[in-house]
Length: 204
Ligand SMILES: [Zn+2]
Image (spheres, rainbow, N blue to C red):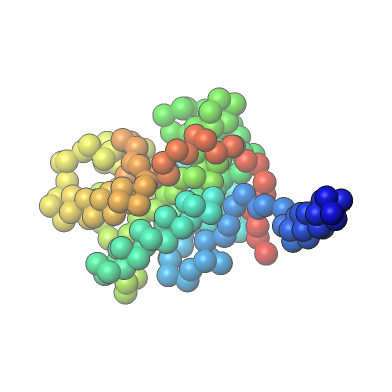
């Protein structure tokens, strides 16, 4: 009897484990929702490096980060806006390319040190646009490195300050934290518990 139950247990365990797929650490946002707008700048030469760094414009994230972003987008949607994605997961090799061009820790996370939270699939660079696709002014372009991009710069029009407030409050509600120097950057909570990755972007 004991032998039989061990045998049954082993069969059960085997059938469960054989159903298990190897866990992919990242998901593609476009597989989860069609409600986002995209302008992945590193897949174009129109970025601060001036070179195309990604093979394709894709947003890959840790599953729980993607889930929180979906909820944030729903929140903005109810207010007449949607999230426009500039950047998500960034392979470590791309971080190294950026660092080779701009080796300044104020602008680029050092890939030989802690790297960037983007390398962990746990940060997003975003803005808002209206549901009609209209531009929402945030006070500076994406990846503009200067005072205008700082979130503690209040020397901006009432409209811009209101747009930023909406963005920051909405993102904070769903577990995303701001950084002082880039209004577009949001790191998901507990981001340092995730490992740095160098898997390639899934282009197909
Ligand atoms: Zn960022």
